[in-house]
Length: 73
Length: 255
Image (cartoon, rainbow over all chains, first blue to last red; front, side):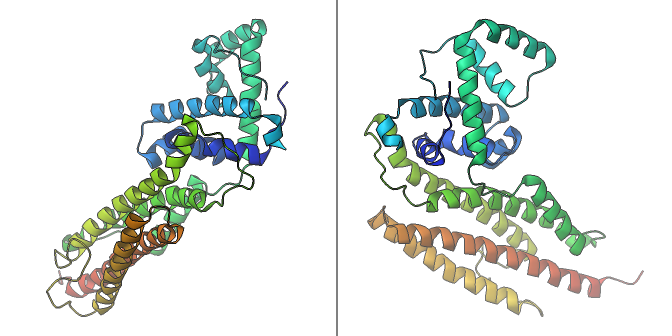
């Protein structure tokens, strides 16, 4: 069962993303822009934006899962 | 978060993300729901993605909604109508739109990137020194390059507009040309002198960063100076538009 994610945990994990993933994820999932808008801002295609966001989410999932409990406190 | 097992059925990754984003049509949704009913791994993945998505939406937002910017641009156009342009200044309409487009794009992307760059380090950061951490180390520099690249695009665009506005009188770098400006262009000259001062600041910041890449003050100074240059170029283009509108109206031949 997934637990709630703290803001600090998420911010830390986001900072560990490769820059391209991070930019697309922040603009789409945090700022709420459409993939078309993300593509326009970052100079990438809509499809690339989707791909970057998907990979960012999966990477974040892994990063958040691997953090030892001691680091979350 | 639940532990992540080895990837299960990568074929279902894209539909899971599409479901999260509300992009699945009815047929695809039905197919995915049937799969989810039988696949615990995908159910766990979806649950984690939903938790992540919810947490992401709770983070502080830095970019004004694009639709808000559209309204702002519309408002600018209402205040400064760009219709009925006489032949010599026919390009003013696209100049205004191009300037607005440059600035909207800049505002959206740089507001966010700048905010991220200026975020202080989180306390007690204990990131493991892995290859992924190397991504983090290079991230700030890469984002600075992104900021510079995007400011550079905006500056190039505005300078091109400015060059057209002055009929080539202004230098490509936005500095004043060698032709005495007509009446009303004194302020433009002042702005262009200010641009030259900002260029000096940009050069000094870049030199400082070259000597000491981790110099936060130089990094902030460079970003500020680039932003000032964009703003000054924008003001210059707007002022030239206004001057051209006035002189164009005076010169409009009587039919």
